[in-house]
Length: 539
Ligand code: SF4
Image (cartoon, rainbow, N blue to C red; front, side):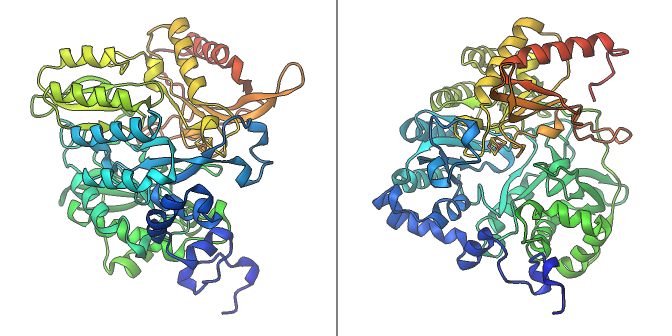
């Protein structure tokens, strides 16, 4: 090969197998999934100190395990301390809930594990996962045993591999849905999650399958979104190359229509293409979006068809999209005449105790199906008489009649547990919601607020009306204090005429964390005063 070495991007399909960074080295040295055996046989017996760095901060992620931040380290030291100084001896453990669906037995087990092993912590994430904190490596085998006994797992919940597959929280019950994508999610999960042929990708691989646009499909590596083909009927429109973090990019439509029965095959084709052609030199250029941007979506589709599927995909029409996404909070009728009830904790923070009470409430009111949403909320399905359940959920502070501020605010993990964080997020978001409820009441504002503890955008900084990126800024007394850079107007519009936007970053707009309620209040009051009419959006 005569390629200029400086330009080599580590693409396997071009014969480039030399590992070009530390992550590629440990992945090539051994399939990261194999670390499970060492966790069960060695580390769980010998304790935290027995874990070598490549496993601790590398391969453990393939089983949903991240070391959590040592308490008491402020955000100013995040970038200056060595990893071993930031690491606590406890882990965050992510449980994948593909499609967001849980039954009562699964929820009860999650609740029990939280109270027994995680100091009663549990967060609903914006990717339909559950996250525990304070997990000891000694307890991990028992947690896996109990999760797997109820059909849940932490396999590939983190790491450079296929992450949890998002699905509509109302799949199979919504009157607006024409085709339920759940069978495809199940097939992908059963066939490909934990498959060693896809466990070493260049970077994380986020995907969704949903008829309804109630998942953030524009920011995934791969999305299948419901679309009706004029001759072939209902199926899925293919989108590729979205992602946020420090180089945000919205996905492109590939113009291809995929029937439900072929979604898993096409999903595996795209994942394989990413494995083989994805960039493995720079970690911050390794997501699929960089390849799609360089190639263009038409070339991407051609390579997918020729090298991975061996056939052409049908051309398809664009999906018909409503003007804005729905969060499913409140009481709604299912197509079978029963109801689903959507409830909002504050920024996804629940606890094992509360989840156990939620499981009891669902069961007592005739439901065995719950759904987590990609907006850090939860639904109870199949309820015949919703009002008694609503009262019970409200008593658990899972608000069905939630304020617009509680509904519209999300926050990432932040400084409390995340080693990359610069600022606190969850507690600040809870304070912000309470303040906005007090100051602005229940008036609908249709404004979304996403708080992030660093530039990584886990709570989707760039696709909120008010996106907040944590950083240290100079306070009035000249000292460094926690604050946020403000991205405005990034909410994902869904209408085809009105293209989805990525938040603009108005030059110089930064806000001290302590001033956040004043800042948002003023912004909202000005927006309300200035908009031409009720239909004018913040974007
Ligand atoms: Fe951690 Fe940053 Fe992600 Fe928040 S956005 S969870 S602080 S990596």
